[in-house]
Image (tube, rainbow, N blue to C red; front, side, top):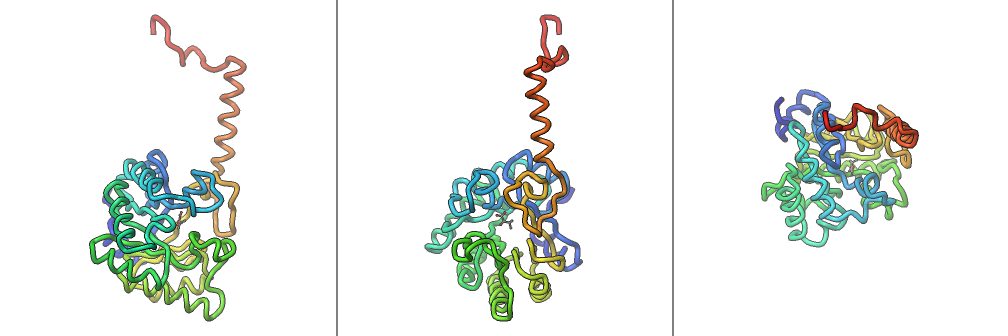
Length: 269
Ligand code: KIV
């Protein structure tokens, strides 16, 4: 088992070896996803929805992110661990951004941070990178801007909009980001971004041509029925599996089939 590092991810792009990234929010999931061979575990601010039950990611705080990041780091051996910076934790000032990254890396034990934004965030990214903070960018559909977008809508459709997303991606790469998430853009645009940038481009809802893919673990495992967009492939139906297992436990408890003798202690055993 060799640890996935930033140079390793860049080498994977060069060798056209696809990068598999998935979100994780706690120790047990991190251990399982790491053992399965995920290259990157992202503590996504999507935890606001799938863990906290909020309608979007906007209410997630830095404290929430750090708590979950530490849990994930405890369960990870091989994967590269990235912590999302939540909404407005890195916008007001460069001091805020540095402080948020410091907490994510020192208290959250993440190996890198991810932040949403295009050209307007390039100066912040440049400063963070100059201080030795590894930054993953996130352009295209930026969930922290859901109110401005009027919903989770595909971005970069049409010549002008595509030019803007490409320019955003280039600005973040030039500022020194080591990788970038491109979310919710047409696959032709994602292909162009992937071919243009030297850094790994991780797609979500952006087609097959990216250097890698990321999905929310609860989506791919079929545990979050509230959200099933076209780009999500369900690899299991654990939601049904959990409900059915717990129904059986409840029934057996009520009918006194559980606990059986083998689950019980006596004076002799
Ligand atoms: O918050 C998140 O989970 C994300 C990914 C899905 C890219 O940003």
